[in-house]
Length: 376
Image (cartoon, rainbow, N blue to C red; front, top):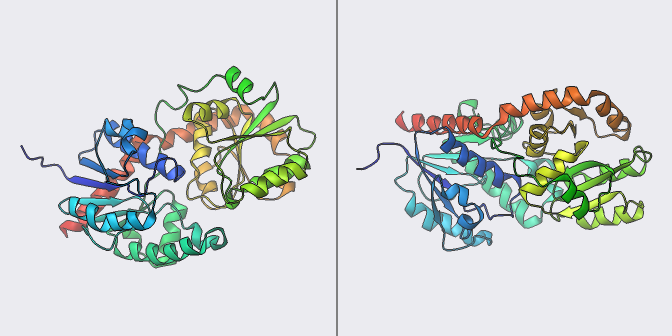
């Protein structure tokens, strides 16, 4: 029997496992959320070769079709979107392009997810080739999409302002956390032994070392305003464009004993490190959402974050949201200790608003907007 449910094709060819940061978890959690709420669609995911091995949990709840390539080469991925993907999704009721751009050819009933517009705010943090690509492809995709989804009101408003898009064509699909986050976390004893943390109080900063993540701000605090605090900062994440500068500053400021660089870790270690931390510190200069702050709240760890981009919107009154100056952050650890119980309670309540199920409900609304547009 042929299904009468709307057919949703999700283009995840851009999502090379382990290479695209938080947007990968954003989409995986949404897909799991669709299954959790029993969304009234038949979903097919089109992903790079190797995706099923990396995310068997997605293959358990949705049809996953792997491309004949790992899609690590952008030019090849774009070609596959315009040929292989276009031919396989021509009859879908909605094609959801999740990487911020859309191919020139294919089904025109589309939802486009734009994660952020960082390239407009900090163009200097992009290679000349990637910047040219984004400047050409993002505006084109936004103009052609039936509906545009953003992870926060901040990004939604930025899209509308920068590209002159009517609000009727945009929507917010919040990030969501799985119900079981933290349940399989690595034990404190194992983490302290493996990362040589001793009995020190711990701060965690989970972010790839890209310039906008602002690791150097935390290093300056450790060397000056937080010099007397007996804390170690665990920097979790891969190597980004500012990695050499970060490592050089650690040495120059004599912080080798106070900074632990774990590199990329699995979810169990990440959750465990956040859970044992006195605070998650997140001085980012730009975030389209900032999932680590919500993850920390769900794990019962208070958050100290910058007041930049989407972060004030996401954190609300559930964390310390501060301007990026040493004077504002100098007393943050003392303030956090005084308000810890209150911040933990507020954080857990805030995180409950960002479940995978609620994210999926937002996504269902976005798909329904596309479907409604097609009926007009």
